[in-house]
Image 1 (cartoon, rainbow, N blue to C red):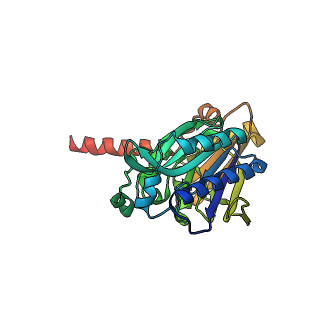
Image 2: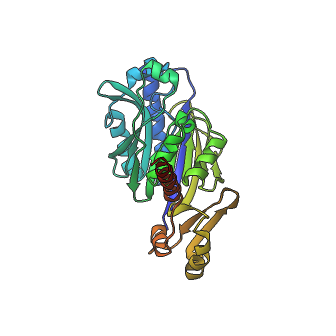
Image 3: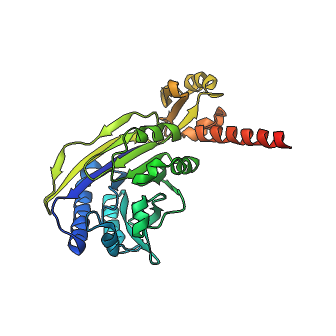
Amino acid sequence: MRKTRLVAACCHVKDASKGDERVEKNRRMILECLDRAKALRPDFVVFSEIALQFEAAPTTEAMKHAEPIPGPSTKIVGEKARELGSYVWLPMFENLGGKMHNSVALIDRGGEVAGVYRKYHPTGYEIEDGVHPGEEEPVWETDRGRVGCAVCFDLKYPEVGLGLSRGKAQVVFWPSMFKGGQRVVAWAMDYGFYIVTCEASEGQIVDPCGNVIARSGPRIELTEMPATLTWVVEEVNTDRKTYHLDFNQEKLPAVIEKYGAGVSVQYCTPEGTFSLASNLEELSVEDIEKEFQLEDLRDYLDRADRLRQSRLEGDQA
């Protein structure tokens, strides 16, 4: 079992400031949110898309305030992450050797940058304004499981979700400018991971069976400046994986007979899948998977795809 407290900080400054002034206010807002998050005891905190430069100006102007990663803001936020003892996802415009990216820095519990996700599919107008697309869908190993990230428009493109699924992500964080709707639910179910969404005004947490398990709470007025904050908070067991019913369901009675309350099974029967979690401290879900020769959802689908391709190649021989 891996009890993991997931937190989305949906926040925004409410005045019309622009440029350097707005970036500084956004940074102060982020720091105040992290101070307030101490009461929530988070393992992960995520902010909304380009939270650092949000509404500093139109995209072309806001990118003038892009920073390197690591850089000044990741250092300052990193100090708060270390005080909080939490991972923090910091969305921002990144200057990577003169190329501008819509990026998210993953800052670890020690305050160091553990990785960077660069928006794989910027919108057409972002690209026209000078935003460079990312080229990878990285997944990082943490003390609470494997985590990944996608940003806003990425949700429209299955290859991003597939990349995260093939990387065995167990939790995906999705900072955005739009709410996502049923596409968020579809991603969680199709790719078998939790999704934590964060937009400036609201967010949600969806489990691997497509259930919305947390929504935005009441709005809070911050004290350092005119800004609002809405928390989305849930504790989940991230020692969980998703499987297809094919070739696996007949093995579940033996799993339950042996481990009983030590496992949790959640069926998504119409979709032909289920999720399995270990509630045991000494045994992971992957240990149980190996013991009973279960094949997880992504491996099963990829294997079927390889068999299809092999058969087509054989027909052409």
